[in-house]
Length: 131
Image (cartoon, rainbow, N blue to C red; front, side, top):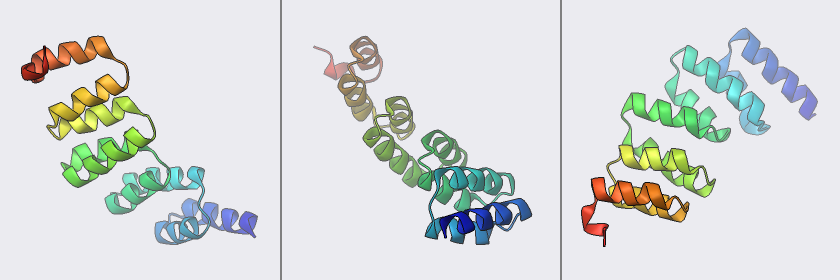
């Protein structure tokens, strides 16, 4: 059954029927299909579907780019939280920094054991934390 749904999803993507491909992907999730769908949705300007697809495939780098383009703090919060839970600390740091949460950025650097960067960051952005 899943092979049939996978082929239907591939066909829907090939034909550009993004709504059908999304419905199939929701019922039979596959990271590869979600990534294809997010790429196609982005190309067609279907940003909500692209965002859903990026979240489903855990593509935090693309989702960070999309959130930055849209200037969407809610999506940046999602990227920061999900990236931290996935231990993708560079993306977690950047999305947190874009939100202006410098204390949280410092915590991310310290928790990642990036102490030299944390010291330089603290001197530049939160000197009250330097002791």
